[in-house]
Length: 425
Image 1 (tube, rainbow, N blue to C red):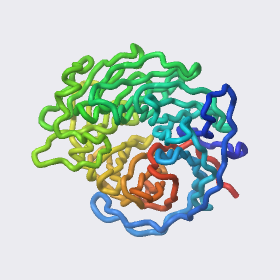
Image 2 (cartoon, rainbow, N blue to C red; image 1 turned 45 degrees about the horizontal axis):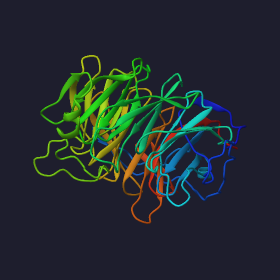
Image 3 (cartoon, one colour; image 1 turned 135 degrees about the horizontal axis):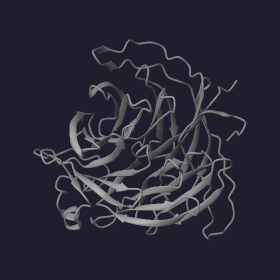
């Protein structure tokens, strides 16, 4: 990546490095580079807006350059992507992992608050996966630590001191799993907190005091106190039974009590059966000020809003079919969700709870989301199906239109915005 592009915004982002040899060696690896093709911005698609219809208009070219990373779990690739007035391009592709005969599966990505490092989870270990730490300056490996079964969503505390990773345990027994907490400087796992079955969608509040995740098979969300490194509260999300509870969930309850109707494959693609009132939560997203918590209910296709202070549900917000991942704008105005079964994203006005735009995605199985630091764009990964490549769409949050798309590696999922720089002339 070009060091002479000085950031004009600090942004959160990501991404990976070269595939090491079969044996481990304590050396810094140089980044592998592979030049890939480019795509130019598309014309916008008119979208429904609150109280009317979005008027069609040609998109204005970006007046800044946006840098982001997208991880492709199907072929161990992490693409560094640049989007600006000159179009959308893959700068280079890095390969990550240890296994020479199988995919390691880069799943989650997150950048340190100071922008010097980024973290990547590889989910397909034998049997355990890893958290990798890389230098953003040159993609060199800074550290690596083994975690649990299928490390997935990753997030860094605002002070950069700790990295939280859910051990999703996608392919293991249907038993409660846990959250790995890693000291970022030492790359040492300092705690492993038991939570629930198939935890996913890990996010930390802006204050850095609470961490949240959803439990796909237990129909609940779990809160961890980052000061005590223990579960402080949990919230039952089954429709008609919503309630907040102090302390951790009972193990027996988490293992068997709420899994009826859940997507036993863990992929969020199964539609609910008649009479199913389960949530099957896949993402937990604090609001921009940390006062509210949004939970994506993949099975019921809505979003539960919780008042964090009172630990009470305030409303259910309708979304698209199979809402999966969530993101909020930094100004606290919009909530965006990928609709995994609906091949679209929902853009929701938080104040009213109304969907102001639904944008079709280029490919099937939309997955990850990342909002730029200036709230101008949301970047959306799509996994694709079969031999299809993955894709990254760019949606303009002013016009509520898709303005660009780019092919990346298969099963694109984890995504983060690294930085925003002055336009490239």
